[in-house]
Structure formats: C-alpha cells, structure tokens
Length: 170
Image (cartoon, rainbow, N blue to C red):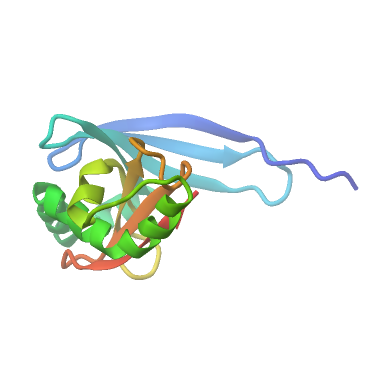
C-alpha cells in the first residue's frame, strides 16, 4: 500500500462583518485523501491594531463554534487588544530566560524585558472555542534580530486576560 499525503482544498463558504473581529471569511478545508477524510472550518480575517499594523485572526470552528465565541471571548479579546503593549511586555517577561539563552548563540545582548518587548510584533490571534479550556492565543514574531531562528512565540491567555503560557512554536 502506498501512502498518499493529504491534499487539502480550501473553499470560501461565506463572509460576515463581525462587530468585534471585522470582516471574516468562513473557509471549509477538506482533505481529499481517501482515509481519513477530514473537514475543518476556520473564520479568517485581518485586525487593525492600535499601532496601525494589522494582525491575522483565525477562529477555528463551524458556525456553531463561532456562536460559542460569546461575550466572554469578545470581552477578553477587546481587553487584550486594547492593552496589547502591556500584554506584549508580559509575554516578553515570561520568555526572557529563553530569549537570553537563544540570543547568546548569535551574540545579541538583551538588556531587559522592555527591550525584548519592543522587538516583538503581534502577527496573529487565534481562538479555538471547541477545544477544551477556553483560550485566546497571541502569536508574536521577533524579526529585527531573528533571536528565535524564525520560530513564533505563542502566548495563551484565559478569558480573564491572564497569561497562561508562552512558548516557541514552529
């Protein structure tokens, strides 16, 4: 038997103008591999940030899951985005020990978490309301010095806005 890697197909299903998340497109992604056949739904869009930049947003799930992005998700999202510079600093403080170790390999000195924070850029926000504990993930990139060799920083926040975890991904 020959293994056939899955071939994924995206199909635009619908669009919505959400009051909090802006213009979102619902994409159905289907694997055309024979077994197992998988279909996922993802709402995708771009968010304007207070600093004038834009970040991607991705909410995984069907319309039923999108309906679960209730006021608690929306309130957490609004609080986190409004305080994004402070959120970014908390993420920098959490990953500072790791950043120092990685920076030693490329002869970069990081003075403090505030300096590291200034190098981070919010790249994406993801939510997966159908997966266990409700969380919002902020994905940061550090491209000015490439300390993390192209890896993203994934920071998980609970719906109270508490930083649950921050680690390298990718």
